[in-house]
Amino acid sequence: MPKRHITEKNAYAYINSTLKHLGWDTRNPNRYPEAQVYTDNQALGHPELKKGLGTQRPENIVKVTETKFWVIEAKSTRSKISQAIREAEGYANDINTNSVVEAVMISGVAGNDDEGYLIKSRYSNKGHFEDITNNGEALTGLLSPEVASRVVSENKPDLQDLPINEEVFLSTAETVNRDLHLGAINKNERARVIAALLLALVDDTLPNVDANPTILIKDINARAEEVLKRNGKANFFPSVQLSLPPSTDNHAKFRRALVNTMQALMHLNIRSTMFSGTDLLGKFYEVFLKYGNGAKEIGIVLTPRHITRFAAEILDVGSHDVVCDPACGTGGFLIAALDHVKTKHALPNSPQVEVFKKHRLFGIDQDPIVTALAIVNMIFRNDGRNHIAEGNCFLKYLKTSTRDKHTTAKLTKDRPEEGEEGATKVLMNPPFALQRSDEKEYLFVQHGLDLLQDGCLLFSVLPISTMFESGEVREWRANQLLKHNTLLSVITFPPELFYPVSVHTLGVVIKKGSEHPKHQPVFWLRAVRDGYVKIKGKRVLDPNEPNDLKIATSVARAAIRDHRLPVESRPKFMKMAPINFDDPLLELVPEAYLDAEEPSVEEIAENAETLVRETAALAIRFPDLWKMYDVETE
Image (cartoon, rainbow, N blue to C red; front, top):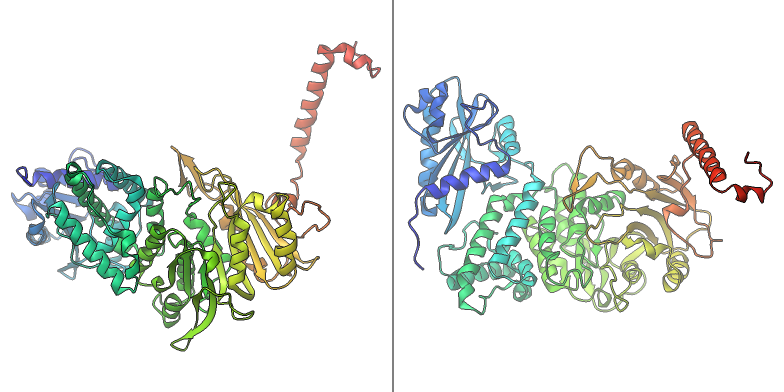
């Protein structure tokens, strides 16, 4: 395949656009005091930088603080990455001969638009430049202002849980989706492509992006298959295996889409991000699942990360728990459970955490590609992958077991004997039943309860209609849910939680194994504000917005643990109250139990004034009407 002439100008443009995208002010600081990025000879306009550089002109020097700087040097091909980093270090050492300013960070950028770009970044540790790492993985993208400030403030190259710009992360996912579209990749195949590329990036060595399409795909597939084999999941390789488009006309476009996507993943520092305390990979998947894989038709809606965290917190998942999600999707609830367990131990890799992630996380999903995505998510976190299974969850059970002297469970096709159920916590969001023929959501809850040991807890997201409709679902509430279990809490979620899917949802917490006591109170919560606002068709977190979930988390956890604890009733928000078993509809929604808000004196006065005004207007407009009631209108 012929290549156009390649110069370093490709890299210059790439660096500038990427820095701007990450939030740096890329204007000339000599002209704009608030600007941050010197390009080429602009750095010589800074007298202190000029003292060290003389007439040398690095590609970019970024102002992190007034005295701390970051040197970036570019080369035209990926093979020259070592030269780029070596020259950047030379410029930094020259700058550091000046005692007024200091070049504390360097980056080498090597590549071009055809083959993509490699990036290495280092930080000066006592005069010696060392790789900047996050969660033990070297950064593979340029640094955002937040990350650069964190590196400088902590004054060390090895960091944990660097800040992640979620907006940049998800906008990159949108860009990747467009690239895959331009690469003639069908929308139903894009999640498969992402899974394969993520697996191909697990190891330190990278696919040969300079190869022709056929060789590149063979390379990616070989790497993905090897990683799955290494993790005991070789049977999932067919679910992620890539193949060239049937038309040879599309081969070059397909190759370009793969190279661009790998580039985007590398520059998101995808490997180090996966070891952070947030499931951004799940959100990244969401971008692709909502465009393809028949997600809408089969009711796949990934649970927002703040809801999975909320569930793990109010159920207070511990390292002793065996956790199962029988409709696990990309693994969001399992990751939230793991992250919650990590917060309860001083060290994230403590023995208790290691046992938990190896033996006590179980997930099932009916879609093989979605299940593969969950496995990829877990492989990147180096945990939990051994117990992710594909198939019909109604045909799978958990039976308690012991492995390596640790309590665990095993998946089985046969329902275990009573008392041998394997799970102690179930967290789930069943597929929404979009057609009459679909399995109803309450059936998933019932099966989730079948996986649980007596006295243990289940959390499930459900359409709100499940808890107030009549018919078969009302019979389930009366004769199954409350006859054999105890309802501990019901939580109304924001109406647009799953936007753009228009399903109003709630969460339920159920304790298995004993009939609901008639006078035992339930914790009712109406959490319709979660800190998110809708902007340009998306729900975006706004820290200035009210967040009912955040306010109520500790109260909910305490009420679920012990229903006897006093809870302050707050009108239209929260209350402890027993179920009204005299209600013929048996509605189990917070709105049926919460107190109404008492109107203020001002509101009463305003309503009274409005009533008088409207009554007078009616009397004037319809005088004959009032004569019927002997009302004098003169």
